[in-house]
Amino acid sequence: MLELLASGAVRPFAISLGLLAGLILLELFALMLGGSLLGADSDIDADVDFDTDAGADFNLEAGIEAGVEAVEAEVETGLSAGGGLLSWLGLGRVPFLIWVASLLAGFGLTGVFLQSAATALIGPLPVLLAALIALPPGLLFAREVSTLVARIMPKTESSAVSRRRLGGRVGTITQGTARPGNPAEARVRDAYGNLQYLRVVPADGVEAIEQGSDVLILRQRDGSFTATPLAD
Image 1 (cartoon, rainbow, N blue to C red):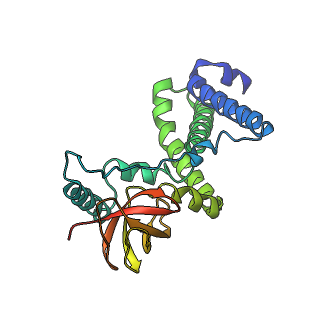
Image 2 (tube, helix red, strand yellow):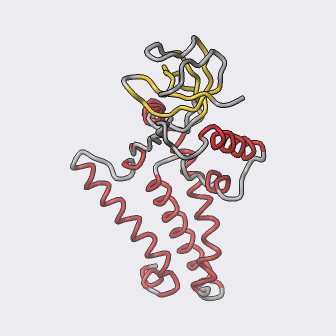
């Protein structure tokens, strides 16, 4: 087995497993320092800060309508050509480094077992052919691991992080009328599919937003989110 691992037939798979071992060592080192490498990117604050000050040279409402229509079309058609495939593979469900580590493990182990079996039967396969055969099982392994990890990850942490990423999402005023200094309640679905209930006030230049209105969440300010109504 050691001879096989040292041979060129399994070089890409050995490199994958080596990178995986390096990630594990770095994670252990980070844990010793009180941090975490694999979970670091889940805490990135990805707020979108929209500026609706006067003087902007574009039609905000027209852009909002076009964006909403595009999102609705993508949801209705199911898997889109790019994002849908990435989502199906598990990207976005867990921190990116966890997905990468799963892919490295699946690809590396599949390749080693494949070349080991081929060597015993007919001889080692060409490296490129073996890599192409091992890649789909590696991706499926990463998908399954991502699904499993996403189920057991603390939901409270996910919810807390996603609440800081609500800028740019569409919501609905569910209770009250939002006026400057007088927030109303809005319902918004976050990136994890959870419903979030926010206190929102109108953005600068907006006098009031009535209950039942669809709004675009802009940014957090003084404990509330600013929002602007979407055109009917």
